[in-house]
Length: 546
Image (cartoon, rainbow, N blue to C red; front, side, top):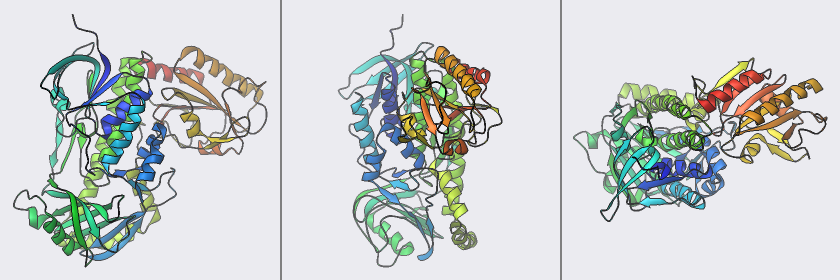
C-alpha cells in the first residue's frame, strides 16, 4: 500500500523558474517543497534581462517596483561594426505596457527578491538536497532525495516539477527526447568593470568578421556583463577566457582606450538550441532550461522559464484544490511547448544574424542594420517580440471565442484599460484583477455602449448562472456611461467605463463577455453575450477539454 503524498508539489531547482513556481503556488495556498543541490543561491549575474511581460507578472506578485529600483532600465542598444559606430536602436516607449524598457538586473538579485517574497508565504528552499530517483504512478510520485549529511529521504508528492536546468535530472528520468543541436565555437562570459566614455544605461554591441562582443550594464558604476565570441581564439577547441584575452578582444572590436579591470566572473560555455518533445509525462513536468535551451540572443531564457512557471502554477493549484479536473494540466504542454518552439526560432535567427562571419554577408548586414533600426515600426515589432507581450495561446484547447469579437482575441494577454468605481475613484482592469482572489477566473460582463434595462436583465441571468455553477469564477460588471444599471443590484461588483475607453479598447459594441484567466490572458470572449457558450467554455476549463 502506497503512502499518502506528503506534499502537493515537489519542485527540483531553485533558480528563477523554480522560485517563481513555488511563489505562485504559495499565493494560491498549495503545499509545496522546493529543493536544490546547491548549498547557497547563485552569486553570479547570469541572466540579467527582465522583459516587460515578466515585470507585469512580477507586479502581480508584488516585486516589480523593488526590482525596478534595484536595476537599470536600458534605453536602447548602441551598435558598432569593426570598432566604428553603426547606429543606435532606441527602445520605443509606446508599447502597451507600463514597462517598455528592458530591465537589467543580475540573476542573483532576481533570485533574492523571489526568495524574500517566497519566505513571506512560509516557503524556504531546502539547500544541498539532490533528487536521486523518482517513480511516478497513477496517484502520485515516489521520490528519493539525498541530503548533505549523506542520508536518503523517501517521500511522495502528487506532482513533480523539474526546474533543474539544462542537465535536468527530472528530464532524464522522464526519458523524453531533448531535440536540437549545438552551435559552432565556444563563447565567453565575463562580469567585470569596463572603463570607457559610453553611457551606462544602454546595451553596447560590437560586431566583427571574427567575433562579437555584447556589453550589458549592471547596477554598479562601470560594471558590465560581457558576452563574447572570438573564432580566432576558440577555433582549436575550448578556451577559458582570461582578463588579458577579453582585453585583446575589446581592443579589436571596442572603442579605443577602453580598459577592463576587476573581473568578478570569467567562464567559457558552449551554446545549444534544444527543446523537449513534451513538457509533461503523467504527473511529472519540466519548465525553464530543463525544457528548452537556446542562445542568449534577446535575453529570453529566464523570462521564458518564469512564464512557464506562471502558466503551470494556476493549473496545478486548481487541480490540487479539486476545483478542476486533472485534464486541465495537459494544456500546459500545449500552450508552453508552442511558445518554446517560437522562442527557439526567434533566438536562432537573431543569433545567426549577430554571429555571421562571412565578410560579404557582414558587409550587407552592416549596411542594412542602420536603416532597419531607424524605423519605429521595426523597433516596435522587435521589442514586442522579445518583450513577451506578443505571446499568445490562441490555439489552446482551453481558449474559445463566440460571435463577432473585435479587439484583443481570446488567447492573448488582456490589455489594461481605465475604469472607475461606483464612487468615482479611478482604477483600471489590472487593479481589478489584483484585488480579486489570484486563482479565480474573472467573467467580465460588458454592458455595451448603450445598454437597456433588458440588456442588464440578461446580464443578471448570466451572473446568477456563473455564481451558482462555478465556485472559482468571479463576476464583474463593466457598465458604460454614468446612468443607473438596475436598482443597485450590481453595486457589489460594478465598475464604470464612463469615457467608454474600456469598451473601445475591447471593441465592444453590444453586451458582451470576456473571461480573464489567473495568468492574465483572455480565455474566452463572446459578442453578443452568449450564456450557453460561456457555460460550455467554463465546463471545458474545469472538467478538461474533450
